[in-house]
Every structure is written in structure tokens, then in C-alpha cells.
Image (cartoon, rainbow, N blue to C red; front, side, top):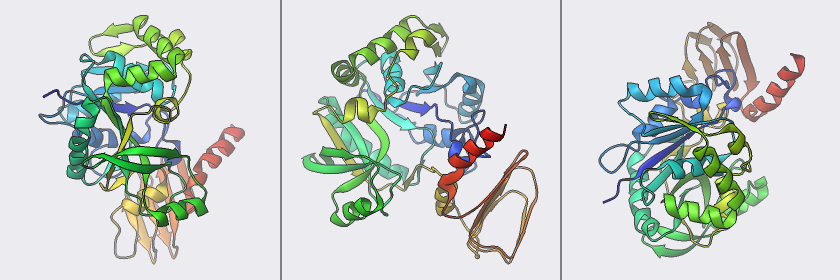
Length: 349
């Protein structure tokens, strides 16, 4: 049986978790949800006899950090592809597919910064998808929604095509609140978690059909790039010519052989401090605290420090994060505004 090749996408900058997550050390490199970093947790959930060594696609500036973190858990990538610039997920996955040593191998594409609490459910969903993957289907995993989230795209689940596998009826862009509530009430929709399974060759065939210029640019970037051991450095000039597009927009929304495996697996993309608070272990007062923190008469707060001591008295429903020389304070429920805050900070520099 052909081994599954994990493809770990680690190019994100994780700015919504500032000040701990920065372009120099983004959230996937941090131990936000456990003792291990999110990158380490991602690699660990796809290892064992069913899985080959992973292909990691990452920002070149994080090379040493990635190798150190993976070595610490006994994981040696078969390839570390160092993107010269971010070009979104479609070109990143194309790099991995072109560099896979076995073109017919199933690629399990995973963002490096997601939480999956029920790894067994995830692996069972992968097994359900494999027969259709061998037949040429491009498979995505649909997360069972538990709230009318407006920050995620959705998948409308179509007719069954195999046990546990359905055709994708359509993809839905991030909806307004009222639409999200309607979809949740009607059933038959899943969150689009951005995790995929398909054979390298079939993905490249689909990309050649729908985005041939992008594929050609990525091919040239590999051909004209540099290789040193497991390190692959695509040509900057060629890779810059690849259109910056998500895999959903470039391929999944256009192909006629796209399937979804609905799965409940404790998934969270940890896209904000509020999201992290929701999945963190809290004390009797609802506080999720890490670092040197003194909290008196304090309720329902997320408090984190990697250095400074934080002292709080008589406050509720706050997010307080201290890292280096920066301190973030905002009410719970407004953590999506960190991006706006960062723009304001740039404007003062």
C-alpha cells in the first residue's frame, strides 16, 4: 500500500496572535495549546507506518527553527521547500506535488497552525477518503460546524459517493451572520478547514487544466531553483510569476471531481486570542493563564506572558498578552481587531 505523504504548509505569519506571534516567530512555531509547538503537533498527527516523511513548505527565514523543532520530535522531512515569497496555498501545494518523489502518492495537505483534538477521528476520515483519492478525486475534509462562524468558508455537502464520502455541491465564501445561521439550521453544510487529500499527479493535472500559467511558473521555479540535501529553494524570479491564489479558488471550486469527508475531530484554526481562550483549560474563575500572572478577583480572562509579570485586580472578560516589549489589552470578543491595531502601530513607526 502506498504511503501517504504529509504536506505541511508553514508559510503563514499569524499576525492575529500578536504580540506573541510575529513574522520572525509565527504562531505555528509557538507552544500555544500544549507543551509542543503547533508545527510539532501537526507533524505528529501524521506519522507512523501509514505515513511517509513529510514535505514542509515554509518561509525561508524559518529554516533553522523548523529543523530544530521537527528534530526534537524525531521527525526528518524528506524535503523542506523554502518559498522565496508567499504566493498563497495553490502554488505552495504545487511546489510539494512537483517535489514528491512518487507522483502517484497521496498528499495529505495540512496547515501547520491548526488544532485537532481527536486525532483518531482525523485518521479514520483519511482512511475513508483514500479509495476515492486513488480514483482521482480531490478530497477536502469538512468540519462539522458547532456555531454560525463568519470567519470560515463553508462547504455544501452533496450526494454520497462512497461510505463517509460525499460529492461537494459547492463552496461558500465566508458568509454574513444571518447566512451562517441559516446554513447551520438547515444542516448539510461543513466548515472548510483547509485540509486536503489527493494524489500529486491528479492535483497537477487539475492545476494544468484550470491554472496552466501558474503551474508553468511553479515548474520553472523548481527547475531553476537550488537543491542542497533536503533543502529546495525555488527560483525567486520564476516563483514571483505564479499567481497568488488559494487552492480553493484555483482548483477545488473548478474541478468536477471534488469530494468532502465530513468529520467531527475537535478542529480549530486558532485564528485569534478569543479562539485560543475558547479551547484553553480555564481555572474555576474562567481564566486561562500562562506565565507569571497574579490575578485577584478576576474572571473569564485570557492572560499570557513570556516574560513580564502581569498583575490584575477586579477585571473581567479581558485578553491580556505580554511578549517582549509589547503588551496587548483588549476586551474578549474583539480580538479580530488585532490586525487593525497592527496597521495603526505601523503608521506610528
